[in-house]
Image (cartoon, rainbow, N blue to C red; front, side, top):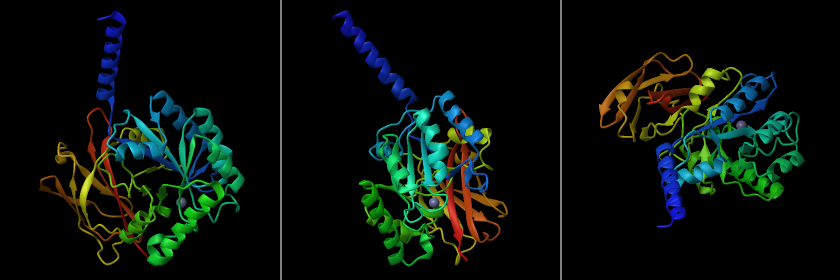
Length: 338
Ligand SMILES: [Zn+2]
């Protein structure tokens, strides 16, 4: 065998080995709204925080991939590089153009921008020419986020469908791009809204709950870690980047609206059979008293909240320490509507 051929064979074998040793089936999506606009700390990231986060993504060897590529590869069963991260920005505020875009461009990091179309061009928002400039770049993908940014689950199904369809149509009309990804405004939905999003031909949709995504994720309720000033500390950022997908099935109740069922008894099955659930911890955000966690066997979990959930959104997070640091992490949303 010629030496060169042997060398090539060895190199490809080592590449194959390295890829399989370090390949992962998990990705972490991080999401932002405003940049350097300290009037709104709950939807803003300070620029010093954002700069530190981008620097850490570089320094830590993270692979920032386009979100549609991450979704495609997970859906088709292809593996992803270890340390895969996707960047998402919702709404299209002006500071995306003035503050985020120059930084992301300089870093060479792709991102997906979910646009609610009616507000574009109004105060504090990007203009359509600015959106067009971004959409032309190969770093940016545009996703749909309705026309008027409503609480979709509070609308009639017909109105919800019309709003989502109009937002999608406007993006097609202005940009000549058919968006394939959708994000629920405020991260709120119910099972009817999810069905409408599927019916309108989207490939995947994004909630606004903590957790990593993987091949067994629900692709119409994909998790993203929202980052803002209050949750922008580096320790937390480094921790969430280490998260691994904790896939669940048979979630009950499936509908997040729990007005008539408060507090809900939550049940699900962890699909990763190799995880030892004895180390799992579940907690709720807000003023909810501690949750009772029952392991029912066969990777089935039951969570019994001791008190009613408060008005608005309650997030229930379940985490399980992962080997090598970080957590298997699954966030779930419950809503008590006014
Ligand atoms: Zn939004």
